[in-house]
Image 1: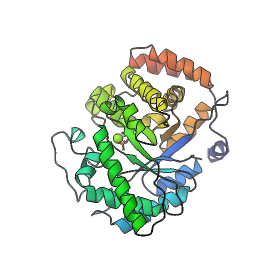
Image 2: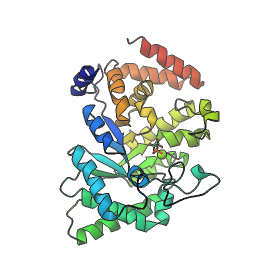
Image 3: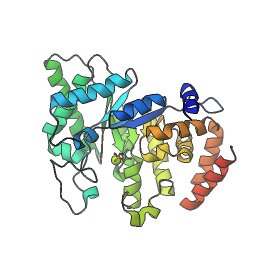
Image 4: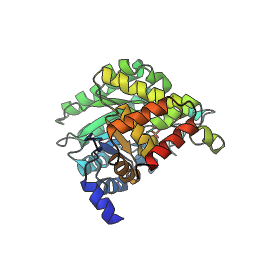
Length: 324
Ligand code: PEP
Ligand code: MG
């Protein structure tokens, strides 16, 4: 198996008809870095910065954060590393910053928390910027954006942090900045959001949860949680079209991107990169190398005409099994 993985790592993620589909990884712990490199990722599409926060017993200082971020950036350099600003709340708690709510997934989480606590946000962004000095492979990603005003406030704070670190003598360019599309409201504002950022990234875990009103962690409704639901597929198609209409690249970093048959559809939709758990990367690469982009587009066309998620799954499975 290791030999097979080694051989696959060296091969490009390219379809039979020559379409290159960049595969990126999601990271959190430093251990993910090694696995990502072994599997030949082309970049980090999502570094979940809340992970290093969760294993501490207090907020890490700017200096501590700088060291943690520097390790990620240096390990992948010159490949891009997309660092998401702190996404706590919902199911992701910090012992030293408890949030008690009736409906945590509809409550105070992600960008809502950090815009209410700009001191947390500014320290984090300053640490990211300082960590990228001399490397310049940082990209900043904003979680849980539901409207233009949140984006503008975030951009304002990032510019402020950038001014501060430059005043202190850090020589860094302003990094590319992106928004996550993971709240249904953002889907309908993709063009307006895209105009103000450098890239977009779909969080299909939350987008599926919010579109279908199904808690992503509740086993009782797990059968209803389906990223191949027709509503999810239509939302994704719209996000790709609208991002490209504004000339902006769009990626996807939810679990869906690491599901080989879903990845075929995402490639056909036109996503510019797929970001996944390193464990899934070889499977996805293997399958995309067995198919042509035109065949994938046929399959997407077929899937988009089916109204039943179960039938979408079985149709895909059948078509892909026939590939061998
Ligand atoms: C998502 O929502 O799809 C996502 C990638 O972010 P997280 O799973 O960390 O909420
Ligand atoms: Mg999310």
